[in-house]
Length: 64
Image (cartoon, rainbow, N blue to C red; front, side, top):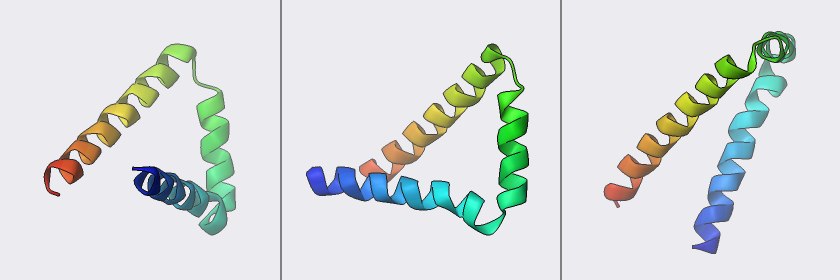
């Protein structure tokens, strides 16, 4: 369980780091646009990301 958790954290860090590594200007613009959104929009974006991640995790877990 602990190894799986740390593997997941490592993969998240890799994926999160790809944006600033490969396209720093575009990444900065994206962050700027996100920061100008109202709270409700950010909550919707966050909710969609949580749902998408949960669905992916569920599909991967049931295929083991």
